[in-house]
Length: 133
Image (cartoon, rainbow, N blue to C red):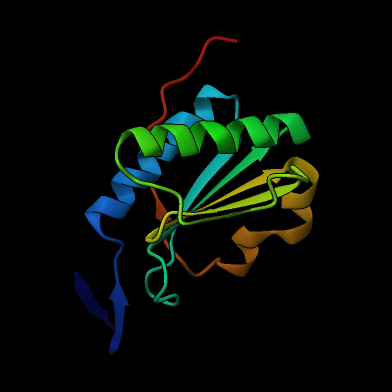
């Protein structure tokens, strides 16, 4: 879908990409991911539609979040194309094609600050049910 504003063309993320991001966010939330943010990067980045960012409290939590996302999306028929950082558990990148998931240790997320780098990209609303603590 294309929209024109001020003679610039903005490409919006596909419905499928947004649905995958939502499914990944629910999976991440199930493993106590924090600060879930989805960004529509389809305009400036032709290789993906949506970045999903999530934080974990420690390396074990980061890995558990990433594994849950891989499992849930796999169950829906979407396989991970590439994954990096699983051994370290500090910044795990999961490439599902149109969706790229970044699962960070909370310290690394603050340091790399992807939200700042992609600040011009619209935020994709996510609906994640609140979990009981």
